[in-house]
Length: 444
Image 1 (cartoon, rainbow, N blue to C red):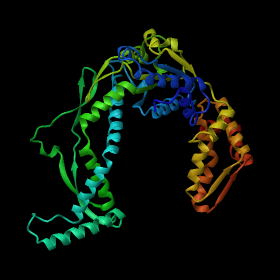
Image 2: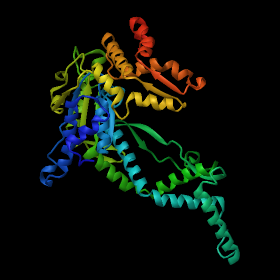
Image 3: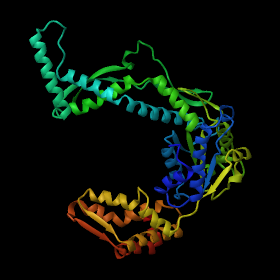
């Protein structure tokens, strides 16, 4: 997907995120720059570092969604972390290097899925053969049966295989041997904080070692179990690890949310004492350092870091200067207007009205929203955000849930096949709640 131009990337983001053109342009350029870096001469390639981005804007305006959709476009390992979850070394809590270790785990899983697709056909054949052996166990020893018996056995196997492929045997039960793996991970304190490491347990602890266990399951379930086992056997773990580490180092994206919460704004004492310490611990990771993981050492020099925060009580200049310098691109996201809410309800591929229409359709009922109803829903969401806490597009969820609560509750018993929601319906349901500020504070 790196062949996408910045304009094409913005166009793809437009399918899910309304507005915020400046932020989309910045991340589109950052993504395209990775493709450009891969195509420059080897001598200069290592010197080209990503331009990390800080997104500034209130909650619910699309900061996280932009980063998440960008990672999907790039098919890159992506992790979202909250800056407030980390603590300075020496305090109880997660150390900042754990974000890279978690990113590696995601990269490993992504590469495994790719390899699983590559070996899927072969694994399916092997799983099918094992399933046939369960349904019709092979002869005890070769040569003990006469040719006629062996031929009859082969014909029976072919018939079973045909029925198996057609799904005619899916409800039959078979006994599958599965390996029960005990949880033998322990946490130890290492130089980099709490780190999960696999430890081989002594052989005399037999009850702690993997054991085979027979399970009585249907053929349909057995097929899934055996297919998963065969895929795992065909995976070259060293190849997966090597490819995953390279993908993390070259294309990984770390989204650090709530970075404004670790900006020190007042006296450095009390519960805020470790804020600046967390910033200084994050600094080497963003600058470029080597992080030890159980799969190997990962260099963070070319990982793209996107930070985000509302910065209501602080500003980017409250971060330590060194960290500010590592986020040279700053983008301000706009607060959402009533017309933005209207577009959010209708235009994105995963628009809220599309979701509720699909949910209600499962009950055999068709729901229609008039244009005036959509405008009124958007107006209510915008008004409530203005009167109370501004939670951005998330307010639409609370408004829609309140509006459709009775319908969603009564629908299975009512047998209604068609529902029309107009402006009057919206006003009747929501107007009293909006007028009563105390009630609105708890409901909307």
